[in-house]
Length: 240
Image 1 (cartoon, rainbow, N blue to C red):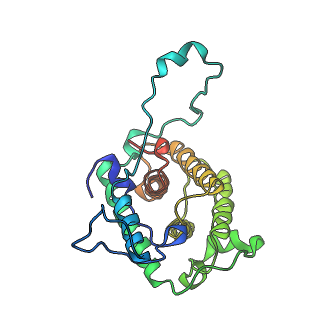
Image 2 (cartoon, rainbow, N blue to C red):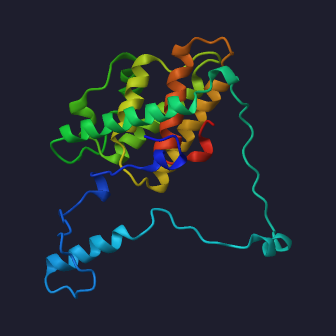
Image 3 (cartoon, rainbow, N blue to C red):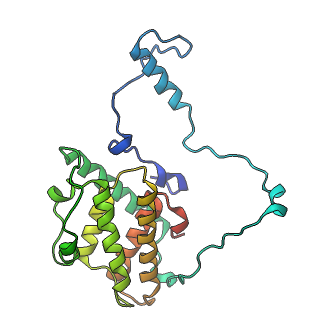
């Protein structure tokens, strides 16, 4: 994986709402100018057209003409102070962690034997489990996207009660990594909001650590911020 910005956005997710329904390949003698005569030829033309589409499309807008008509100005949230520079991860570290995360995500998805269908869990005891036991693959893979987002929301709110100078424990970190690994892309607005709130809380916890803090306290926070910002494309929350 390269160090450029686009390298963090490249992921072919074969699951969730982006999974392939049919496997279609272009023949060597494919002629894009030929009118499709069969359903298979029509799908081949669809695949061909898709290869010509850009991943990102932006509009070229002259913003100068809007300056005198601006009625509202959105201020960036600067309420969270920056973490000590010594705690921030390098770009190379972030690139490697995203590659590891992507490989792990692909590996566990190959092991999934059926679609997730369990939409609820015992919320009253969930936080206690997160603090005392590691997540089980057979359990985590049965929950729907909504259930996993709810788990993330509960843990995220708990981060507000972690004392200044402390961080996410090893067991809780395992639950968070498992949840993030099993979320489907693209994110719904609600899922995106909860991921962003989680990352912001991680940034706040990290900002309250001293520059001499041991790596086992700030490294998990760096990892979760990296996954949310780089893998799930919330780049305004990313470290440099």
